[in-house]
Length: 78
Image 1 (tube, rainbow, N blue to C red):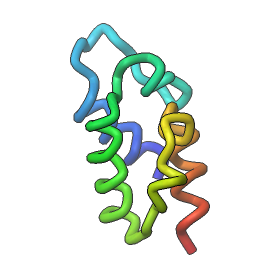
Image 2: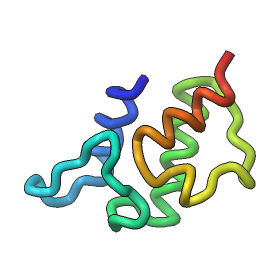
Image 3: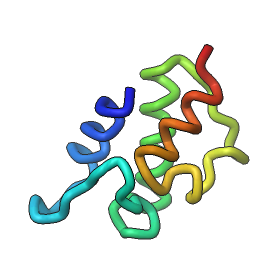
Image 4: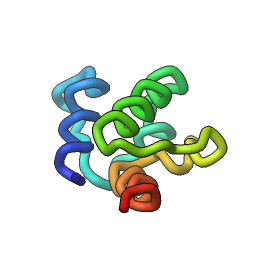
């Protein structure tokens, strides 16, 4: 799951190949993911993992790194 999410983030949001995105890279505060992109990332996660992430849990803090996203998704998978 972790690599799948990392690869999605790299393919969708990495604009400069010199910018390395890792599991701990700050995605929101680092400028890789903006609020519009966060919504598309949420939709991707919900479809891919067949979950529903409540809007109040889809915060910039929860989406600020791949590791945090994995923790969020794990909270809604069975």
